[in-house]
Amino acid sequence: MSAQFLKPQIAESFSRAAVSYDNVAQLQRRIGHNLLESLDQKSVPLVMDLGCGTGYFAPLLTEQLRPEHLICFDLAQGMLEYAKQTRVTANTLWLCGDAENIPLADSSVDLIFSSLAIQWCENLPSLFSEVARVLKPGGRFLFSTLGPDTLFELRDAWSEVDKFQHVNRFISFETLQAQATEYLQEVSLREDREVLLYDQLRELTTELKGIGAHNISAGRQSGLTGKARISAFKQAYEQFRGAEGKLPATYQVFYGDYING
Image 1 (cartoon, rainbow, N blue to C red):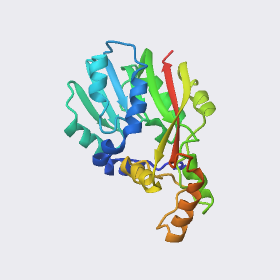
Image 2: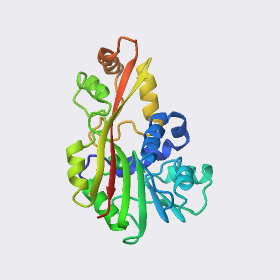
Image 3: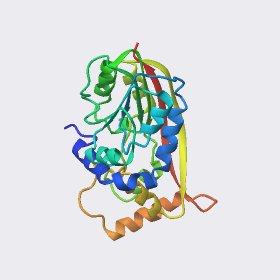
Image 4: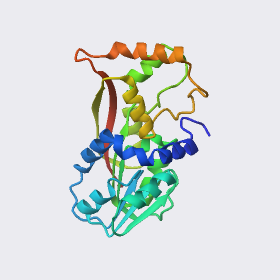
């Protein structure tokens, strides 16, 4: 596998995080709610939540769009099992699979909602091709994803310590736009920034582990990280501590709205 991300590790990481995810995913929920605000439709027959995770948005999509059928789709079986046990929604199909090979018929879905999921895809052209295939003509793809400046403080601090890849790498706005418009018609694509503040660095690293989004890239270091390098990393991160005494962690967020033209 040409290896920006390794899908079995992605599925395993998020499956392990299923129980802890909702307790630490305030930012993820906020971004998803921002995406929901873009939905002006009142009734959509078949809706898909692509990368549904713990199923948090399943009842919200059901309430807002009143679909005849809702498909909650995720790569991580553990997330789906947790979601089925904790979310009670009518007419919902919980489906485990790969977004780059969606097991649905051509022109079968009216709307695909996807919040903070597609950044884990290995091949975005394959994803957009599949989205265009399963969407009905005029169907809508609404998504949020992360850009390359996400957690730049973490990346820069580690770069002063060693040459390993410690932070997941995501594609640029321009690349995302170019790849999406090969298959879908753009309605809008915009960038936003979210900055979270922490007293201690371990709060951030614990949170990343809790949502399953710690470093799962192919270029990461294998094995344990020594105490001296951890100490050097913490010291390097301190350069970002602001005047208010907090350590920032920046998320670059892209919001996309596309139709199957």
